[in-house]
Every structure is written in structure tokens, then in C-alpha cells.
Length: 458
Image (cartoon, rainbow, N blue to C red; front, top):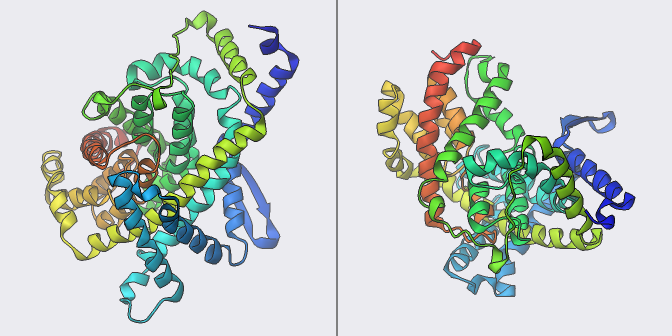
């Protein structure tokens, strides 16, 4: 290491910046503000998002502004002409404008069903607003996580596992952890920024974004509340630790398999716009700590000024902010309407029905298959399909909701608006692969492993 790398100033910068990153993204803290009835335990960036949304009229003003600007922006910048996918999604996003106007003015000629709790309010309050508020806040915090050597430091420890199992560098473990605490939007944002800076190849970035950018832990809690219970007995919530660990395990197993299948196995392994991507070397256990420190300090010494890092990350966040919320409003509502009023998801269910039948779900096989089919629209929707099914079916569906990763009201708009050039065809193929594999492994898990931990499944 050079004197600059080992200097007291660089060591202090490495320690302070990365401790701030760990605090912002990975440490849950409880904040109580009795005057406004706020008593929440979560990560700091989520506290900021929640407190912002408690400002009077914030939800009513901020959301529409972002959706209107985002839907119109491609036609002012010319981005809608970039390629066929951009053209299609630019026009689809335009639908968010009339949808938002309907939401604001609630005209009487619109069917009342649109205003049901699980329709437009669900799309706006539970999906669009949290993502639209989180993206700029996360962008402001990303320089601490990405630019001062934490990923390189962690990468040295995880490379012996990540490279052979998932075909990604060790530092991708940081992306994965960030997804679990911050959600898929944060995961894709971090992965996309690292890819553009030459930290991942296109193949590695695609594997991480489609295999690990799952929902945040808070959403997992909501799933465990909705499924896996009878009457007031919420067995998954009562055994939250087991449900969380096993869901993450199934997600990892499914990803380890899909990286060896089409389309991920055949993805281009080059860097962003031809950038050279440095490969992490495996280090023996004896020298692993020293090597990790060296890599972290070296990366920290090469970092640009904080202001420049902040502007770069904020620019990416704003670009995603203008693209994702309109897509969530338009695609999300379309998907919910298709699920409610058309047989399309009944037809898609036949992809999964044979697997559900073979795995022993009997008369509930088609219900489970339909839940799997509708998961492409939103990871919460299957809960409504299997809510009255047996514990076995409910618990399997709960794990599949987490492990399938890919859905239109979450990761898909983020993926399509990233720089990884993931096609709709590849996304749909990956979704089918992930749901089938998740269904198989979740069924085995619930049937044979959950009873060991005292969780009733029948």
C-alpha cells in the first residue's frame, strides 16, 4: 500500500464513511415522537421516508407531481424514441396521468370497484408512494455505501462463496443485504450504479438484480401476517425467524440454479460500455482480513469528492424516480384489473398446475397455481387467492411470494429502467423459472422442515 492509502486521513475517512453507511442501511433503530404518534423500529432511511409521508398533504401533493412529470418527461427529452422498449413503456406510462386524475378527482362515472382498498388505493399508498419517496432518499445515502471501500472490503470475505455458487463477486453480498433492508428499488439502484462504475459485468449485474433484489424485510412481515394462519393464529408471524431464514435460503437456492439456465447463463460478460471489470481474487483464510483492509482502503483513497459522488448517485436516483412511479401506477392497476375481470391468470396458472398437483396439493392445486400466476402482477396478490386454503398451501405461497423476486409492481419497472438492458422476454422467462423452482423447494421445505420447528402445516 502507498503512503496515501495508509494515511491517517484515508483510514479515518474509510472508517467514518462506512460506519455511516452501515448505520443508514443496516441498523434498525427505534424512534419515538409522542407528539405525532410515531413509534417505529426500522433503518434510518426508512424513518426519513415514513416521517416525510406524515407531513400534512405530502401524499396528496408529492405523488401526483412525480407521476405527472415522470410520465411526460420522455416526450420532452426524446428518451421515448431510444428503442422499442422505451417507446412502448413511455406510452404505457402516459396512462398513469388519467389514472392519477381519476384518483385525485374520483369521478362518479368510474366504476366503484376501482376505489376498493385492494385496487387503486393499494397501488398508490402501498406501492407507488413508498417507492417514489424512497428513491431520492436512498440516492442521497448511496455515496456512503458505494464510494468509500465498504463493498470492496466485504467482497474479499464473500468472494469464495459468491463466485462459485452465484457467479457474482463477493461485494454483491452488500447489494443483497441492502435489498433485504431497503427493498427491490434500492437493490436495483445499487446494482445499476455499481455496474455503470465498472464494478460488475452485465451478466453479474443481471444475476444480482433478478436473483436477489427481493422485497424488504418489512414486506416479508406483511406476508407473514396475511398467510400461514387460521383465525387469530398467525403461525408464520409467530415463527418469524424461521420463516425469514428459510425464505432467504430458498431465494438463494433458486438463484444458484437459474444462473446456470437460459437466459442468465448466456448473458454478455462484458462491462458497461466496454469498461474493464476487475476480478476479485480468492484469498486464503490466513490473509483474508489484511487483504480486505487493503482493498477497502485502496478503494477509499481513489474515491472522488463527496459532492461529486452525491451528484452522480442523485442523478441516477432521479432518473429512476421519473421512470418507476408512473410505471407502477399504470402497469400495477392494469395487472390488478386483468386479475379481477379476465381469465388471463387462470390460463397462466396451467403452467404451474402440473407441479402443484405432483407436489401433493390435491384439490387446492389449481388455487395454488393461480396464486403463482398472479404473482407476476404483485407479490401481495397471491395472499388474496389462497387466504382460505389449508396451512400447507398458504405457507408454500408465502415463501414463493418472497423467492420469485420478479413482479410488475416492484422489480420489473426498476429493471426495465436500469442500464442493464434486460429484455421483457428474459424477465418473463426468469419469472417462470423462479416460480417453478420456488414452488418445488418451498413445498419440500414446508412439508418436511417446518414441522421440525414446531410449525403446524396441516
